[in-house]
Length: 161
Length: 158
Image (cartoon, rainbow over all chains, first blue to last red; front, side, top):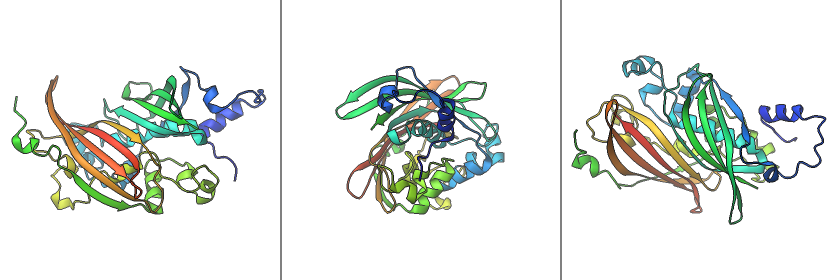
């Protein structure tokens, strides 16, 4: 069983074929403040929203009843705050892969997102610090609509093994 | 501006405690619902060769144990979660912000205990009028008493 890499990491790896990979060091050493985390792109569908409502047993109509959502002043059914958090968690966990884990994550939803929106999760490393035995990278993270504004700013911390 | 009622304030600090046993299917379905194809969440063979030794759940998996199994008849007309059904002079509720601290990974067969409570209710006047904020605290621990996740979530009632 080979090492699984998210598609974005595979692309980055392919991009680096031919480079000298011998002196890249450990994952922790390669993280620099200001590093931009490879973005994660999602295009949520009605089915996806329904699945997330079902798995979290969230019966709030604004997430699956278009008529109700519009009556409530929304353009369409709204993507859950909690689902947006999972996009940000995946942004971080895909980036660190087997070399780390998500320790903290915080986000605020500022604007509504609906099925069909192209949502790009991004982040950058703000600071590296050692806390006891833990090597931690503090990151600024956010979700933006493609070619538009940030809809959910946040912060995250990953522990690097 | 309407004051926060005594009935609403009385809900602050009241704890609800629930237990859930995690199944392989829960983890698989949660990973599908968030569209995360990491094999660590679905492939036992793959997971066996990682530092975890077995399948684990995605970081925010405990979200699936945030809302109670209240029957639909107990929900408000908008179907919003019972946990945030606070008597406030508002018509709508929406998710605001959330902050998670993550501890031990969740594994198949873990028995997760969740302690839920409202920790604060306050109001602010914004551009669109008065907004009421309900702050929820969710603490999830496993059968060994280890913290798996701790969330502070803010819901906006308007």
